[in-house]
Image (tube, rainbow, N blue to C red; front, top):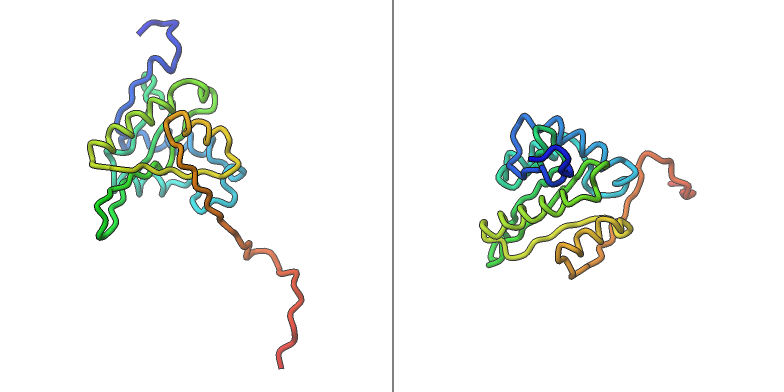
Length: 169
């Protein structure tokens, strides 16, 4: 590796280890903030890493820049009963904010896609907020083209209702 080589060119994609958990978690906290996912059904927490690592550790990857984690991808496979299809679900893909315009995310995605093919995956899915244009553009560059909008609704149960209720007899 050359000294003045861009950081994203010095990166090695490898399987995540338990020792990587703290750094992966920190990057996720930086990228997947409450503002990012305030109404998504999945929120970033330490269980996201441990659950996926325990079930599909070969699909939990990091981008290693000489001992410093630059990004990660956490994925799983899904098999439906009575279906010939095996699905790959890229649950989380996060890259340190200071290098998000590099090729780290693309390299992580390419390796996840390769591994999913090896596992017999026939279709890969991702989800993101409908207004997350950077993520949508990134995934379109990776070949995703069958965009299907899905509506999520939320009800904040911690707020008092503003509707007037009738008196019960």
